[in-house]
Image 1: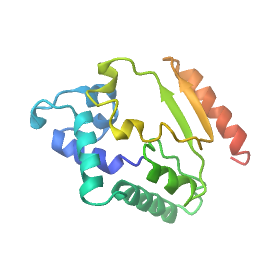
Image 2: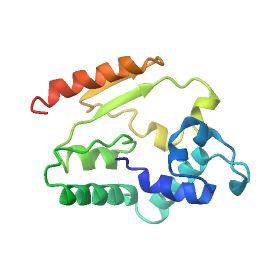
Image 3: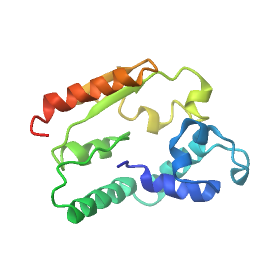
Image 4: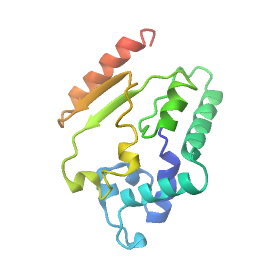
Length: 164
């Protein structure tokens, strides 16, 4: 589950694309004719921040937590939910303070504009948690080795969720 799932659903409609396309680097980097050549990554920053400012600072948190609650109601045996994209203090608070969850920061190497997908690397969505020091663990992912990343994830799960 992701805080940006609803945002990506809206972006997919505006981009005349699929929700799945909004999650891939290639899909996010593609200039969209329906957006006058802007990429879906740029749209997501504009739309996400715009609704946060003009409607409710917690709009994406409320939607995501509502979806998480619904998933738990549908499956009472569900033992946890992983959010893959916390980017703001309000999202961290919803996970850690309101739900007693843990936070892992995954830092990835992104050294070129293609990796950024036209997004501003200085946008609040990219920097809002830079000074947050309450992560349960920080993982530096500076290689393309998916197996190494999986090993980090397994180690974390073993260390924190013995009963799973």
